[in-house]
Image (cartoon, rainbow, N blue to C red; front, side, top):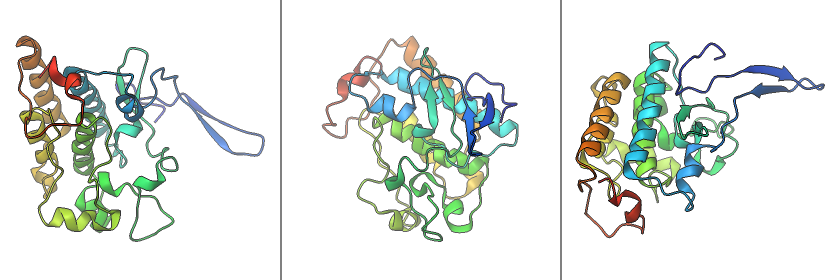
Length: 239
């Protein structure tokens, strides 16, 4: 990982060892912390276009990792970082598993902490991880962005996530999430891995969505299915 060179992938600077032999990973300083905490913080008010830009940054980073045959296996908002310019960078590679223990569950080994609410069905069922399983997780990350960091599948226990998906159920469209963005999420959650888009296609689609919404100057194009959760002002100026 020290060889990664990309604007949207956090490079490991090095590793050192304490006197007792415990390793410490040296990373660049990320002034705005992790993406999950940033979007959850009520003091921050990212616009819809900024949320999309975060998603685009992550997609570009994941495109680079896929091109280099690197499978992340734990892609989520908590595992992306924001620098002082609010550029999102794919990071951590599983280093936060002990932080969000309540969001992890493994049916095969209760000692292992697996992020099942972000995992593709083939990863849960057969322990198969590819860039296409990372694409599934990316779709969940997009959902996190437009819900301001909510835990996926609210009310669904970790035991039941796979059965939930087998019933062809998926996460609901977040309030004020553009329809084209939700359609991209649904493509990422295709049951058959080969039916999911690759990260290059995802980058192209989000770039086009950002371009269109920037050119129209914030014309509304959001989901108006419900009353929302009080975050309408966050998206109003863009969508």
